Length: 280
Ligand code: SF4
Image 1 (spheres, helix red, strand yellow):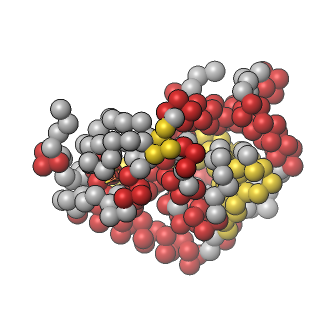
Image 2 (cartoon, helix red, strand yellow):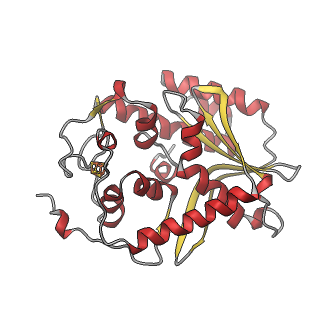
């Protein structure tokens, strides 16, 4: 039997480690944050139908991330190419190699984890790739395997975009001879495996950095002070949420084919935190 909401734990304990995923969940739906991160309730329902198709896509996304990481770490292309053995993976792999051949990455830091204090808590991020170029520019790359190219405005509003750039400025001095990078040296690039020549690029400024860090600190304090985590008022967010039966927001999973860009961003996210599960 599912626990009653009245028996849910209702507070995070400092120091709590926030990630872009947990902050995004809170921004989307405070109850989802509570269920996933405070209650740590396991995924009780499929997110989309057909479930197997969705699972296959997520698995391919994870394998692609692992392939790119191994490639960046220097594993031979021929060995990795054999693992790109589905139509999606084969296409993404080719697109990735074309993309890589055109890049001057500089010093590569794949699988980089950074963290810093955020008020009485901590903020942690795992980056697909951070590249420090000779011209003292630092570029954050994030690989996305979305079926549709999202609008740039959506990506700009994602907490990932704000967290990754701000935390890099805050916590990456060790990549720059002990000196913090200036925000103007930072750029974030979302590279879409199915839209390889249409990446989204986000430069950064000192004004944006100040705004982001203050907003993130406020958000962490707000979550910390909460005793109640209400259900979202936007019921569209429930269609692909695994907790919808728990919240009595519908028993049926949303259809993959009907999934809009926003829902896809929120629910078919493949992030580095999941990747360790894939062993080659
Ligand atoms: S089903 Fe809806 S209300 Fe419940 S956690 Fe998910 S998004 Fe929030």
